[in-house]
Length: 241
Image (cartoon, rainbow, N blue to C red; front, side, top):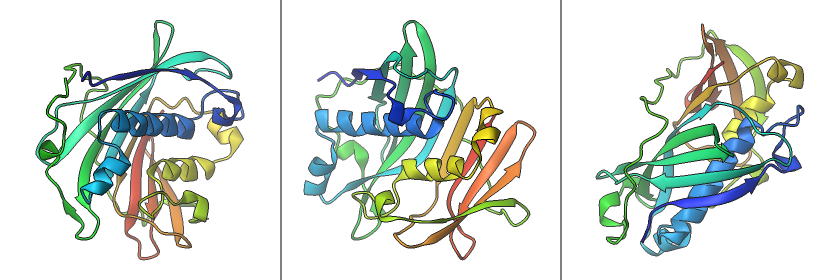
């Protein structure tokens, strides 16, 4: 079984920002959906894992943006997982328009048993007949972002909605990205050339919970904190511009 998915992707209007380009939150969602589709193809989808009492857990995601395609552009989206470690593994993503690479990324995944919250051994679950691609992209370590945003600017208060909740019954990871980019105005976003977004997911958020979205400016962009009522982080991110 070859362990890679290549798929045509047209940039539809629901995926675009106010400038008519693929939005950063839509790019995260595109890559997440690719991972879900390919996971099912290689017998590691949500239903297959549920039979084993497991769910996927997104730990970290880094996306590097070279350009953002516009409305109705035809692209090719690719994804493949690396050979897993004992309890964690990376999955890689790439978006191409013709010969140009628009974006590339990677996500660190783990598997957990929901009833105990303990990590499972990924290498024991992966099908033995998978052929792993050796290509590595979006190289470099994931960002280390602290959780203390006491001195940061508060951008927004966000109430977790029913439409934010996923199969694991907590806030979908891609929707944290939509929430913190949604806390900025169209005019402010139009001035930014975002080249990298690095997210670490710390703890789950649940329907009805109010989250505080904070921003701290850095030399190359800004750090984002999405915080629970007790000040602990649900997710933190580093944005490079």
